[in-house]
Length: 246
Image (cartoon, rainbow, N blue to C red):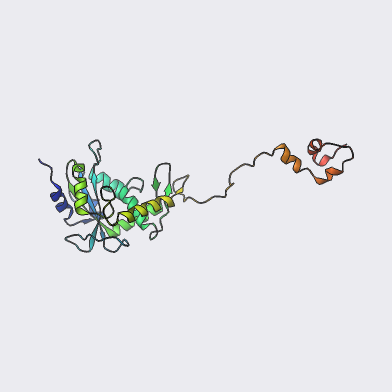
């Protein structure tokens, strides 16, 4: 069977989106375990300054983001794993969409990202708060298609989703998305253990004092040693402490 073209994909993505509670149901009502496209839609006004691209069947919704799964022939991921596993139940380190969404909501949801060696993530409380926001404000549509990467760029260019950056640099919201992503990454503090917020430490906290050099020890010799009548050298006196000399 021939793969559907760009127009068919867009037409199916613009069918009535479903609530996330429905998307998580088992197929056929929920997201299928197949390859294809997906589109995220939001209630208008829930993201500041977001350019509106209204849904043709529900003008109260506006397009946010369009993606595919799998992204390449070598990947075995499907729509269900990508959307439920990464975008809804994952973290910002495993989902570009979730990362962008968190960066735009960092202040309003009071999110505090932390960084590991390779990723920027949210702790359990912040991640749950972001997920609750998704359930309250977002809707989802999808379209099955084999080898979706073949026409991904054409679909994105035609639909103009404001939160996509790859292949979408001409969009008027592109600079805002890039700036917010950079700010989110810059705000991430290093973190030692999951589940604990990163907190600043004192500059010398946990450090052992450096051993003193001989010259530093000499400078700390008690002043009363200068009255010694035995003509001791400073090096000799420095080792006597409170015993004195003689």
